[in-house]
Image (cartoon, rainbow, N blue to C red; front, side, top):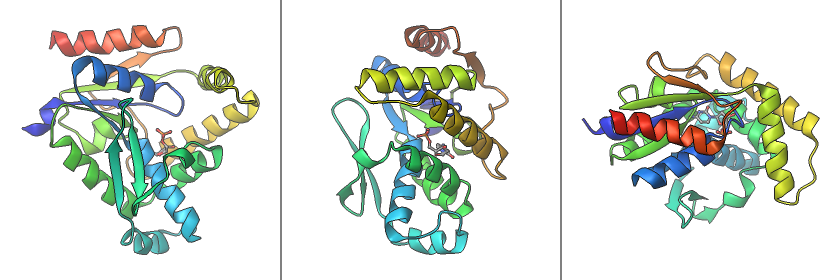
Amino acid sequence: MPELSVIAIDGPAGVGKSSVSRVVAAALGYSYLDTGAMYRAVAVFMGDAGISDTDSTAVAHALIDLHLVLAPSEDGSARVLINGLDITNRLRSPEISLASSRVSALPPVRQKLGAMQRQIGETGRVVAEGRDMGTVVFPDAAHKFFLDAKPEIRARRRALQLQAMGQRVDEAEILREIIQRDRQDSKRRIARLRPAATAVIIDTSDKTQAEVVRMIIDRVRAA
Ligand code: DC
């Protein structure tokens, strides 16, 4: 059963899933699958094509022409290519964050990306990170974790991260975006954000990244 070597890590926006998942994957010698980047890539593609990300029929049609590739890069994350074009540097803007959340509510998008994600999972030894890894895409994953923290704490962390990168930040704006995405991602009809029944829930509010990583690795190794 290939899904047995999948570690599913889900949780809301800005909780630190990506950094934690990358470190866990590197420590265990697994590959890292950032499914949020795939939804973000679809949002970029639809935006460039002038297609409304709430028009399910138009999006479904446009998806036929979307060839999405995740190419491994040196730091363990992936370069994201759509139809041969590297759009990795465009994935992280606040506009694309909100657009990816909207487009991810559409069934044809989830169908296409879910199938790709399962295919990648079949290669085994994957840390898969997103919103529905443990509930929908890899229901038989060997390990399921759900990271959580209050929106204010997530916004503060994101602001500090951006500041450290030399960017000017508006923490109140970041908080608004996080709350809006939480609402959209957890209220939608399909694959909504929620912990899998058997997920280990980790409240990261008072924990460092290293502590969260350690908790996950200890659980995996103990099994
Ligand atoms: O993890 P992220 O912030 O990069 O994800 C961007 C958006 O993509 C998120 O707001 C909801 C959507 N998403 C999803 O619906 N399912 C996933 N497995 C991953 C992301």
